[in-house]
Image 1 (spheres, one colour):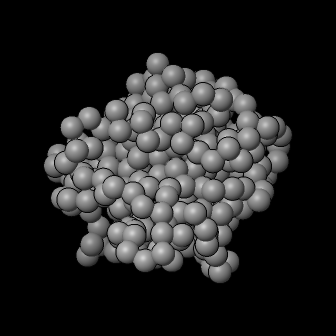
Image 2: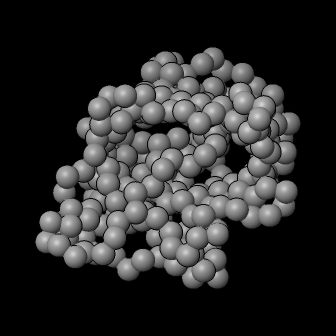
Length: 258
């Protein structure tokens, strides 16, 4: 449930920093909150991705998605493995068809009805992140956007539904970074089909659980996520996370699909 940590890049005071990160105007949280939907469409559209990333995905999986817009309301039990720090969070997740198999998303998190954070993302079927940014609503400046720069290996979800393992190897960095990228790897295992209505009554078609493990540039496990892949809609929904800080689970309370 918790957004993965984001790198914040300072000013370009030195030439080395210029080569590594480039210069970007800091993003003020206050400015984004004036129109979060506009910020999502302007900064997380497919044309913001490197050409190689777009080509890898379009050559492998052109879609389509089975929806134009999906809004989910989820209740998260966060850090449920430690009763001394367990909390309840509400999430409103808006998924938008960005063309082909790409999904723009905005997750708005709150506690006791009070907004606390947002997570902006462009992804492959809401399963593999491509461009992302977290936003603490109590902060003045948001961390820099990060993005996948290239893929070394990319498996499609839909080409062979019987395939049990999906692997993704990629380089990533901040959106302004020009060199010295980090390596990442995600390995996923798919379960058996079951009626999607078991997850939420109005869902059509079949669903699969997809268990994914994320590894850092040293090949060390960073976290685990469980997604439910909704075959009728061509999109994955995260319902479980295992982080060093704790284990969390989500329940879907309501869904609106267009």
